[in-house]
Structures are given as structure tokens and as C-alpha cells.
Length: 231
Image (cartoon, rainbow, N blue to C red; front, top):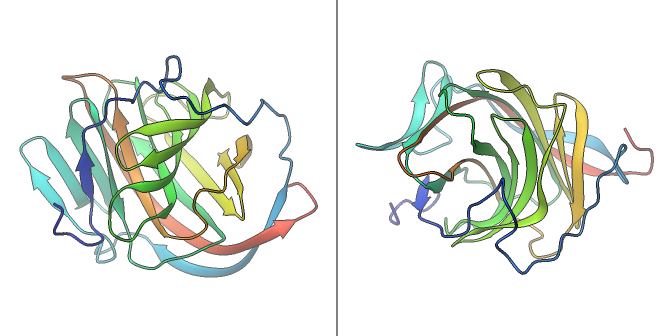
């Protein structure tokens, strides 16, 4: 897989307990909020994919891992305690990423979502915006070895649980990071470790022997800018 310059990559990680206490020394820097502290505005549509052919994303398949287009969507399907991701080619700085995410597998203790500012060398370093089948949200930083909390996993009434479709929006503008779910603000934070990179999609499983299957569709990437009016 390391030969795929901008392809999906699999990594085993020892710090993936999204639903338990933090296993990182990083300080939580975002508190629960009812409204976003910063607004945003769409400037220009940069990229969109309805996965008619999936040419913008690489495919990969083994006995216990599938990353690729199937049934008109991009699917991440794997078994075991790990996280996996795929990423596109173009690099961006300030963007809003939107996609429809649908959990297909039955086991709900998982996480899946979108990523921004990933390194183009496919090392996995970047920001991850995650929801879970049991109704949690989180913003994470990956150093390429583990997912570390920027915003700890917390329950959100905006996440549709189980086998349901959720529209997820990840905002990366300057050092401002925010996650919206089904057009509702969920969580936000500020972090300055990466200012540009490629976008991606990811799945996380914390438990050995359990599987995750999630479908991604109607991905859009917008050039974005700050707006003083929260929305």
C-alpha cells in the first residue's frame, strides 16, 4: 500500500479509544457550544464526486479490507482494530468538505468521517472529523500513527444512529476546525499544526474481530472563507 502515492492506506494504531478516556497528552481545547464561534462562507466549488466511476480515489482489496467504489458509492469495509483512510490528489488550504455517509454494518461502536489537510505522501498526518454509529462526534489529529483528540468524543443529538444516512460537513479555515452533522453545528476547535493538504475519507474500529462498512457519496469540496456571521 505504501506504493500508492495518494491511495487508501491502512495503519494499525494503539490509541484509538474514541469513546473512552483520552489516551493522549493533548489538552482538550474545545468546550461544548450551542452555536459556532466562527461563521464561514462558500467561495467556489473546487471538486465534487458522485462516484460514477471513482477515478479520483484509489481502490484496494484484501481478505479483510476493501476500499473502492461499489453500488454507486465509495465504500470502506474492514475487520479489526485499526483505522483506514483514502485521499484524493489535489491540495487545498481553506475548505469546506461535505458528503453523505451511511453506515451499513450492524455494529455501532465505531467512527467514520472526513479528513482535511492530509499530507500528500499518504502518511496519514492531518485532521479527522468523525461521527459514530452510536451517536458520538469528535475531531482528531493524526500524526500517522494514532488518532489523538482535539475535541473528545461526545454524544450529539444531530447524529442519526445505526444504519442511517448522515450529511457531514468538515470546515478547515485557518486554524478553525468545525464539524456539522445534518446541517447542524456539532463541535469546533482551533489547531494550527497543518495549514494545507489533501482531503480524505476514513473509518475507525476500536474492537478486534468487529467490522465496519460505511458508504460515502456526493462528496463536495468548496473553497471557503471566514464569515463574521455564525450560520
